[in-house]
Image (tube, rainbow, N blue to C red):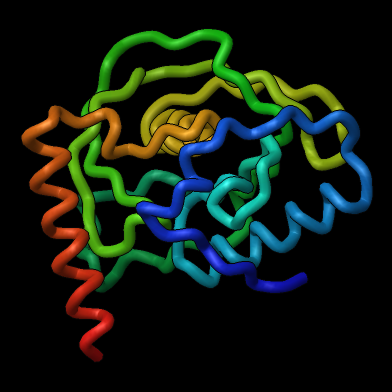
Length: 184
């Protein structure tokens, strides 16, 4: 396993539509392992293969369980890695309903977030890391993360789901953050 380089916007590769995986073989499993390690290294909730320069329909996610907001932040347990880890090949949304708004960020657009409108509930069909079919019903943060990562497979970034005005504001903040980072 190794940490791969995460492509950063405006890298054109992020806009490519990923190809379906024909067979879940050792190369795909190695990619998945690298993606999991890269996601954790980047402190993300999810990662899509195009974000690490691979044009395949593969995503990984580890969305923490919902937290008890009545417990003060300093007394809440740390989210445990791997408890909700999903490794999905050729995922597709087959049902979507409702509407939810959530502040999203992205490892390919570090340092910026924006409120995005998504379906509140989704059903996703995919293959697991062993090539077996799975169906996932999700709501809340998991539904949001699934939609976000599947968008990456189609060359769509969360900023594409914003109004032009909001997108321009987010991109200005992103450029400032990148310039400040380069100055360090």
